[in-house]
Length: 143
Image (cartoon, rainbow, N blue to C red; front, side):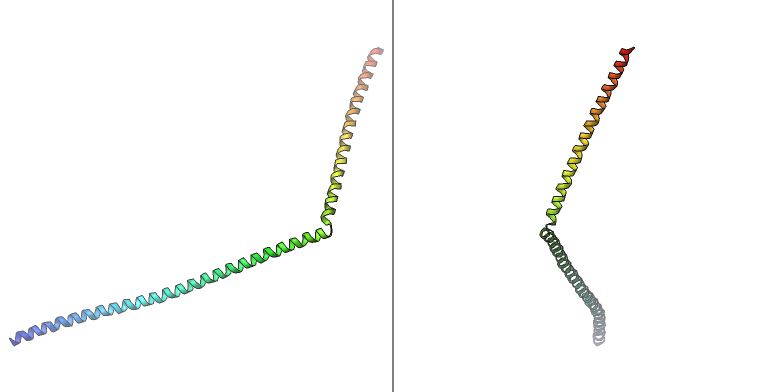
């Protein structure tokens, strides 16, 4: 029985060694997967940090743009207000309005003169037509 026990014991040892080798392979695969997961996690963390920094830079650029555009709009508004104030103080607006009124009056006078001239031209044409008709009639009576 001792041979049989030794044989059985030898088979058990072989099976245990096979199981140990299989477990060593599995452990090796798990360690490899763990290293891959850690590498992916590190890369993911770096990408997140990079993305966060990019978003921060974009937000900062937008803030600067908003500040600059508000500043530019305020400068334009101040400049326009200053020019209007200068015009008002120098009475330039009133002078412009007076000049416009004079120009309108001149245009009205010119329009009335043109209308009068057209009326007189029509009257002269009518008078000339009457004169020609009268002359024709008188010439017809002499015959």
